[in-house]
Image (cartoon, rainbow, N blue to C red; front, top):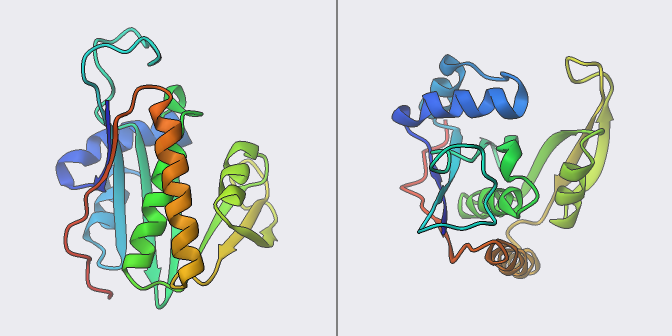
Length: 201
């Protein structure tokens, strides 16, 4: 089994909208996803799992194959800051290290593009996501009351010093931990595929 994280293109967007509906209940429309692909300061990525043979540890959803797209993430570049605007994994594949794989990939991209810090908002009620972000070094910078449509608050999380040797060492450690977690359910490889970085607008 191979896990691949790479930028999404126009042919992937219908799958992204369908996955968005399952994860977020319909957060962005097809037009919204197309805008992220077109925007120079944005990178929209997808996480795909390529199955090799049969693996009984993969959840059986009644289909013969894995979904074409299992995770989605989005990164905005604002001056020297990387703003993670979206990160989600298909509900049936959560708790297997795929969210961590997607997050480490976005942090790797942010560092490649010379961002000095990263920030994001997360629902205070999403304890699994908060735990993941804290595990990967994010600290609480504030709180946005009633940020979400259901009235729940968002935590503002941030991480600085992305260009330091210490962060690079931490990132390598998180990547090793991610690969170990993925290997526990039969993943043999985690591939990050980036083209030329978009120019900043």
